[in-house]
Amino acid sequence: MNVIIVGAGNLGSSLAQAISDLGHKVTIIEKNFEAASSLPRGLVNSGVLKVIHSDGSTASAMIEAGITNTEVFIAATGKDSLNGLTAQKAKTIFGVEQVMTIVKDPDAKNLYDSLGITTINKAALASNQLAEFLTQES
Image (cartoon, rainbow, N blue to C red; front, side, top):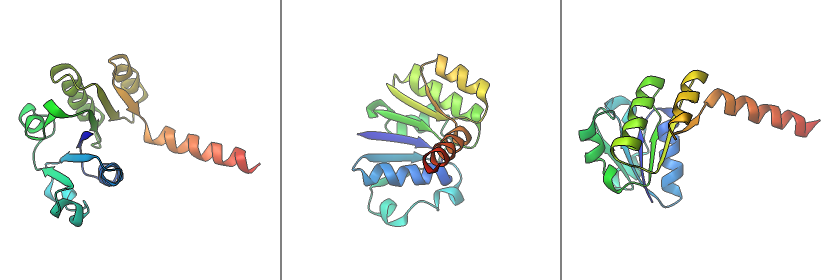
């Protein structure tokens, strides 16, 4: 499976490594060279992870990353608006079937959900997981 991730921060880097460990081809779009340097060097040097140093919201960066042949697109920058923009482009312009985005704002989550984009709220995931853990311990 071909996966594109926009954003190589903590979440994007961890996600890229986990997905590549499952045997999938991962391309990361990250304009910040410093953020991209946190990616596992061995995976980048071996070609398991491909890095595009560009603005992930642009069509040219998406095309360079191989969006026409990707099955999954994940927007994982630190900005809801940028994530939403890139996710919408991937879904509506390039027709990627499985599009996901990370959001902080519940209103943004509702909007992107209504557009058929899978949304993940890190704070809600963490709080739900901690609450579940506490109820299992009781």
